[in-house]
Length: 330
Length: 288
Image (cartoon, rainbow over all chains, first blue to last red; front, side, top):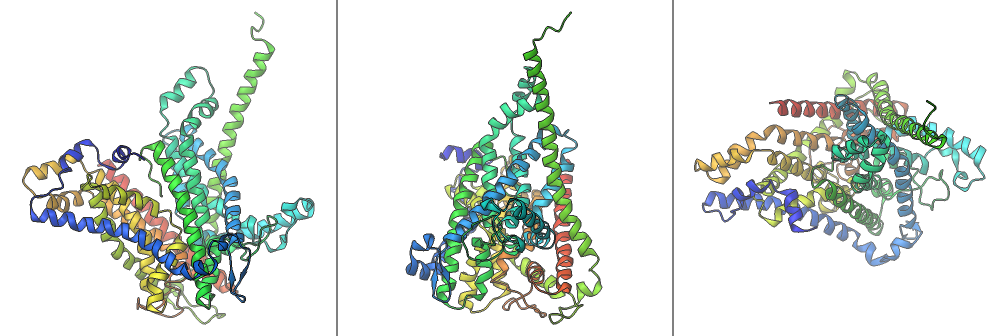
């Protein structure tokens, strides 16, 4: 990112910069005010570093004991004091990717519908409820999933296994209901509103004349969207999808409630398998000795690392397209 | 005149028209699915939750596990207490940093802070919980409401910072210039002109952060922890509504499940009402 680009993103514009450029303030009050607000700004930076430092400190015992082998091992045995996290990382990623697979077409479809098909006055009536859905607490999604969605998924799983059990993805313990499939579906439902809202904002930045030009040349509406609007917005849309991926990976409560919490490698869609977040959530208060706690914090550190990389990518992509005009959180 | 288009052209035209219809129908379907889930979730929470709410539920204390009746008053008060305390911690930091970012734009630090805030919004809430655990709970030796507040504050700071920054950006430069031209020092211009002008938007940001934190359960798992008894002491474990929903939903009793629905109803009403209100507020503001 070049400095100039950041400048144009974050400052109030040229006029404001000229007026406020001079920070070598003369009088005492101004100098004090500058220092005080600077201190608050520094606290924000400090908090970020403290977060990383604290996680490392908490995980240090496990890092020293297991090193990077923690990331590739497949045992989690509190009795033998042996910990590693590969199956949970895979479990997390598989659930998140299935969720994306389900959510992305639906979200982008909704966003296209809202931004190009709905008349302007109708837009708020559809897009506002979707934003509301984004604001529903994750624990409520979890509760709904546990009591309403899981029984439905359970019947679906039993039917799939009975009819298509020869297919390796459906050859698992179908009767639990909780598992990879349930976790993925609730994650998809949770990230649909986020991806939809951000995609809609991005699609609305597509210059109207581009689409109208296409229409004037005789293209159908769909052709102008598919060949002009979507390619124009593709970077930003990709950013929106990555943002959803980040949410899906870090999501805790709903996945803890319906993901089926057992430490195992995924073999089928029906296996109950831990995510990183659900493993921390369900085992942390039961961890009885410090290496156990430390290993769980190590899992948290890995989770943090993955989400930070994803979030940086999303920020960059969305920013590159919208030049700072799209707020990235709800 | 016979049709001047060849058969191939006609087929191509029909194909294009079919694609157009199919795409339109597909998009309607996508939107319908999204809206369907919204109403499914809202509907179930209202249907299962509203019927279980009475005066006793809102004012009573939890009874021993397995007994029917009782209420969630301790969790309601606990949630408000923990979140309010978090607002008190997060507001000065977020607001102060936002002032620095917007009013002193030549400082490189400001841009870094704004960028950092956007990255921090992506930190999973469970990781924030771990952070508060390592920072507060471990040194203090016990779960506490205060550690919960600190976890919530960590979630709120970037939200408050970003919304406040956006609010300050909307304040016309001419207002600042007018004040400065009158000889008012810059700090008084900011406190006396910029802040009051943007107060509605600032309040909206705070309310947004408040309602966002109110629903978060993950950071409370190993900070505020939960408590079946009445407690107003932030130095001790304290009950919060999202934690209570988690405990009750995963517990074995039907009465608990019903209470989880009812508590979800209360939580969702608060979150949705604040969201609708802030939106109405903002819209009213923009018409002025």
